Amino acid sequence: MTGQYVYIVAPSKEGPVKFGYSSNPEERLRQLQTGSPERLVLLNVRDFKEERFARFAEERIHHELRQFSTHGGYYEWFNISTIEAEMVLSDFPFYGALSVYEKYERPYEYGISNHISDLIDDEEFGGICDDMVALFNETFPSNVKEYENMNPLSDVQDLDDGWNEIFPMEKLAYFE
Image: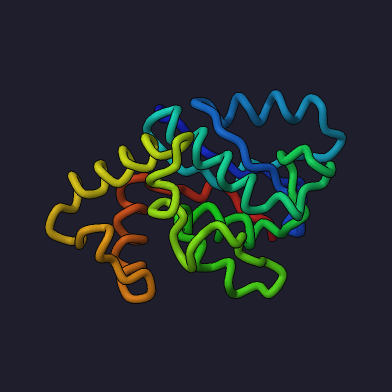
């Protein structure tokens, strides 16, 4: 593997799950395993190409799931299932799948489907969001409308498919 990955690690299908980022998820799994009495499995990776994109994705996912943290404020491991975790990673940055679960409440500061466009003017994340959108527009120039004119309810699927092509996700293991 060569890239900058956000990964999902878990000891069982029921969780808890860890979201992290690494340029070498297999090595990171070995490091995590030395501190865990349970056998950990590297389930999914998503290649964000650049470290700053991977760090941003990990941080935003941690923020979205903070209420499910296993260590009260230390947002590395979350009490959610691997199925839910995979949906979160595959939907980034749209999180459309989260609405399926009533226990997920969207933070008030984000719109209904896409926090990338909501954060584009943010001082801390604006540059990263701008660059991610620019990469999308560069890759799919004819498939996307101007972001300001985007209808989040009808245009999300096209955007979601595009993000997944730019930042591909791979399933590495399954729990039975």
